[in-house]
Picture (cartoon, rainbow over the protein chains, first blue to last red):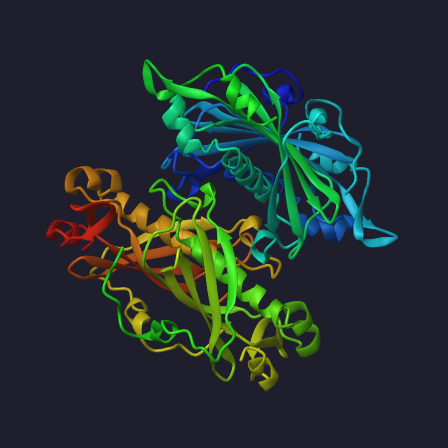
Length: 156
Length: 156
Length: 156
Length: 156
């Protein structure tokens, strides 16, 4: 499926930056990941994005359990996710999910993901996640907090 | 999780339009839909978006099998999907996915989705899908085609 | 798919007993539940079994959170699950999962499940679950305990 | 979770046979595979069984597409699946699914699976699948057929 690219919010993830660390997560497409059209059922790509983000944090020594203990954060909840589907993937394809933490805001950050299939970019997207503590006045809510500088540095 | 809204591509789905048909798809959150943080694992929301889009087409008499027979299209492949996560959903929540076909382009259209939990909008997002035939010169590719006017009219 | 029945462990779930409560859980088959063979991908049936068991307990006033508070149990962990697949189910099929707690052992119990599709039994199976406390000497382990009589009575 | 083993149908898969080929499928447990009890949600194990069976057939040169072309079979549909859950698996566990085709009947065969976690058998189970053609009198049904000897030989 080739559709003319839409300009806009996702443009910043099209170019992976060389100065940033890139995590590569290998995913084999299994039969059960595909639908009657014989292509990957699209929610699976978001599952692979989530996997890659967690593995990326693990790989730089910032696994989420230890982040919770050291900084008191409650995971890194998702606030936004987007994907553009450029080419279908099929049973037995060997995919690489390439991820970078491409953008740091004060209390949120954006993880860019590209799904590469035999050298071709099949899907590109991002997740925005928030650095959050348990809310001091309501245990059921979270409170976004400024992200420490050493966290950002770990991905450069 | 309340995060200041980002302006941009999704703004058109924030306001559901009264003149358009709205499909309501009921989803019970099961234990297996939730993760160790005890909230819905986010790829599930995209699965529910996909369900709602197909049910919506069924509900207006345009199920995708008959579309294939009448118009020669190959399903309605996804080209883009996005969601913003405004509040977490939990085991036993009874959700309503509200969907509208909010925007028709020449060869693509956008289905807006909102996940409503006890009257509160928990997630909002959209899918962009394409009206496509099998490519005349390559059976493995698709060719986007203009969407017939009667298809658009069915959702108004 | 009709295959001669195998005798043995599952035979007791073939006959639902009239004296026992039966829970009925409605499940619509969505596109994403099916595979390239255009039939339900079989692990989904076990997901629906799990859903039905939890809903069944809720329906008799024994939701698992309150069981934990009242009896100190750690959920009702699965120790065995089995299914026989008698007929395929397809996109848009409206299934009923019929469940009974068919057998009580001292520390475990068996939930029988049948998936009924248009009046035909498509799948039958069971789950065996254990009534367990946190182990007094090792917080990472569980210790099976005798099931209280009032729990059993709730399903008759 | 240690529960006394039940005698019966599964006993033949407890001992993997040395004379048979064993396929090993590596599976990393991701966050999204686990539930609020922080352990793998059990239907996932059946998904990994299915993956391992298909990869096993691929590995001996009998991928299902070519089987369809050469023998006219319609996949290898599942007729029965069972698992016993011996120990929970958790996020970040590196599992090995060990599979053998342990038993050949005239028209069906049984694939034994064991999930091994750090040297410990966490789950064991099997799938029974059928060798089937499209039914000559009804395209919607299948007809079980005798399994050719060379198929059996490929797994020894």
